[in-house]
Length: 123
Image (cartoon, rainbow, N blue to C red):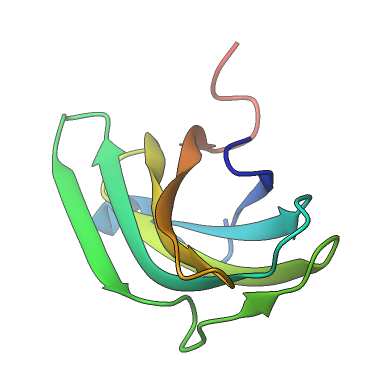
């Protein structure tokens, strides 16, 4: 937790939408961002680093999340869902959010690495 911003992540494998014969493994993730600080913050940008088990890396950089740049007052949370398609059965994602607080101070919040994996694939 940096600057009192907490990130929680839940990953789901979409077996019915994935196509293992075409090497397309589809995952959704739900992220909850909580402002545990005493100053409001706004999420401005995102940077994702997505890696499959072959070592292929894709960087995704852009404004906000799901078309929004949410403002979180103290003790407020914002939750959103998105997805990723990788070419292998397992992979990982990590990154950062570029934020600004109500005092005009910019900072980055690390998104902890999480695993993209079909259930029961990893021990």
